[in-house]
Length: 251
Ligand code: F6R
Image (cartoon, rainbow, N blue to C red; front, side, top):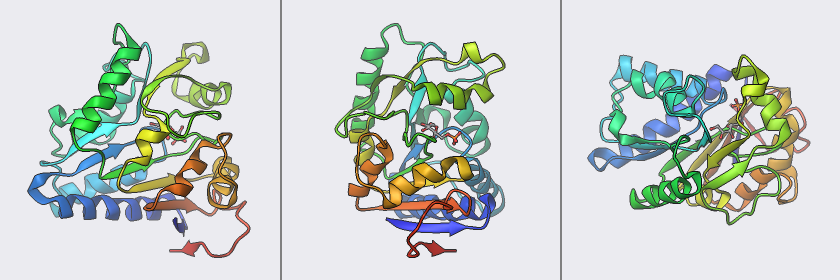
């Protein structure tokens, strides 16, 4: 894993945006398949991509995108749905066609079937060229909570109590936080050709220490990434504060 410890979130966003730009340019007119995360971690990267689109003409016109997960029970136009989130914070502000962005349908009549269908749509697109990930304070990636199988595919998952607590900040009323989600599995994520994981703040420090210096264990799901050949980790000083080895690269 390549590790970058950055001074602040803006520097991290620029590094992540560089990776997206590279993948998009490499794909050319064939179009890149982008794996998009929601939540606060990718926001500086998305802001930088929007800036590069506006000021430097970075184009997403040929790209396609898949998001990681969606709350079960929320329709795509619900203010807290991840579909709405990704449209507001990226898609609607660049030239990525809305029709080229796929998200699991949290309001599907049968969420289990929707999970299987979503996995198939992702496979049919040829898989993800670059996947951006955040990480939960409990080490989850997408909504693969502790105990998730390393081979898991897109499925309906129960959110861990700590995830429900962490996400309550996005909901006015904590009792409104959904308790289940449709999430890409660890096995699904492992097939992304390139992965960039970004984290900031002391609340992520323990999870980052497990990811970079811990044993691979299903109790810290992100450690599954240790097996992936092309992972870049971009963290600020606070998220890196529990690392003990000195081989991480400051940039
Ligand atoms: C979001 C997702 C989650 C978040 C994680 C970190 O699509 O799948 O794994 O990346 O919970 O959330 P933030 O970035 O809000 O701290």
